[in-house]
Image (cartoon, rainbow, N blue to C red):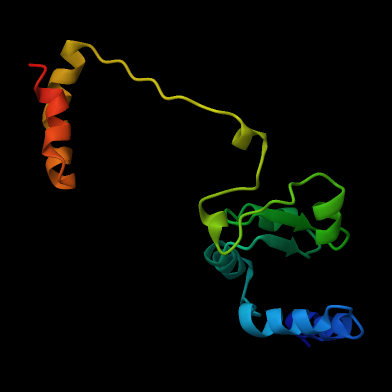
Length: 154
């Protein structure tokens, strides 16, 4: 019997008598999937493609798998780290990237509340060789007048 079969059986048991069982069944029926990987490398590839909001790594040595994962909002390591503990009291942010957004975003954090500014400063000598590149990009984007901002200075 596979771990996947055990998980699916446990899902059914957990829904029995749950106050929101109908909502849970609907969510499982419309927006869920169960996958069985052949090995840990394939599991890592699947996880990174799916980019889950939460990922539970239930392995004897969960740390051995973490290096394979680059796209998950919150990674829960081991059998004793339930998602609910992470959501409510052990520290990781409860505001996580959903719907595969973990491919390009992370959990809400203090950096999201800071404002940053960009600065750039070129000399005449530094801009000159770049002006041709600026013009080429402006032409490609369809903004030649914008690109002229570099060459008009000469």
